[in-house]
Length: 332
Image 1 (cartoon, rainbow, N blue to C red):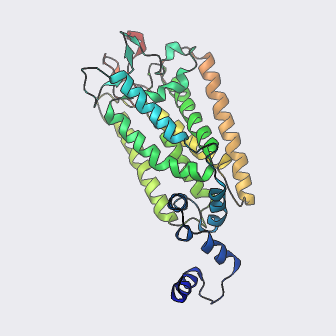
Image 2: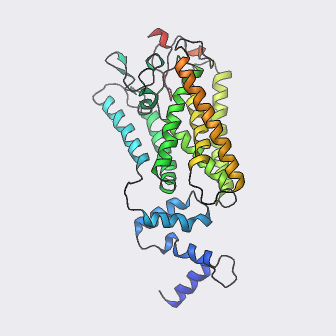
Image 3: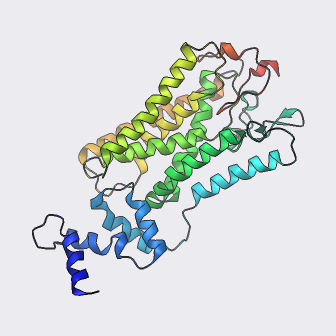
C-alpha cells in the first residue's frame, strides 16, 4: 500500500474522528470485508454484515475466519434443492401446467405420500414432509426465492443447526395448528418455514436493536410485509365470498416459531438482563403452545367441527391452491 492509501484507510477506520485508532476501530478495520484478500471470504463477510450489528462484526468475522466447511452451512440450500427435486419428480412427463399443477398431491388416484392429510395423522412423517409439495411453480418459486434470500444470511451468522431447528419446528407446528383449527384441510407448501425465517429476522432485530444498522428500514420492511399479509387474510376470511384456498394458520405458526425460537437460540454476543427475561418468557410461551398443540393432535378427532371455518370451500371438489391445500376430507 502507498502512504496515501494507508492514510485513507486509517481515516475511514477512525469512526469518531479523534485522530486516534482505538482497539474497537482497529478490530473493525482488520476484520472488515474490504480488508480481505479472498473473494469468497469477502462475500461471506458482506452477506453476514447485512443482519448483524456493527459492533458484532469483528467477532462474527472471526467465526467466519475459523469456518472450515465441516459441516457446511447448507441447510437452506439442501432443503430448497429437495423441494425443487420433489416438484420435478412429480411433474416429469405430466401433461398438466407446471405453473399450477399440484405435484405430488395425488398419486395414482390416492392421497400422495408427503402432503399432510388429517385422516392419516398416524403417519407422523406427514407433519414434516408436506413442505416438499407445492401447487405449481407459482407456489414453489416465491417460497424458494424468499427462503434463500432470508435464510442464507441467517445460517451464515447463526450456524446451520439453529436455523434448521427453527425452520423444521415451524413446519411441524404449522401442521399442528392447522389440524387444531380446521382438521378438514390438507397441507402443502413450505411457507411455515419461510415465515419462521422472517420471524427469526424480527427477533434478531429486537435483541440487537440499538446496534443494528438500518434498523428502522428493516423494521419497516418486515412490518409492511406482515401487515399486508394479515390484511389480505382478514379480507379473504371476512369480506370475500370466494373460497379462500390458502391456509394462513401455517404462516402464523411459522412466524410465532421464528420469533420465539429466534429469541431463545439465535446467537446473541452480548446478552443483557432484559434479554434473559425475554428468553425465559419466550421459552415458556413456546413450550406451552407446543404441548397444547401436541395434545390436540393426539386427542382431537379429524372429523371435529372446524374452529377456523372454511365454509366457502365446502363444495369445491378439486385440489386447491393452498400454501396448503384444500378440500374437505369427508368427501374424498
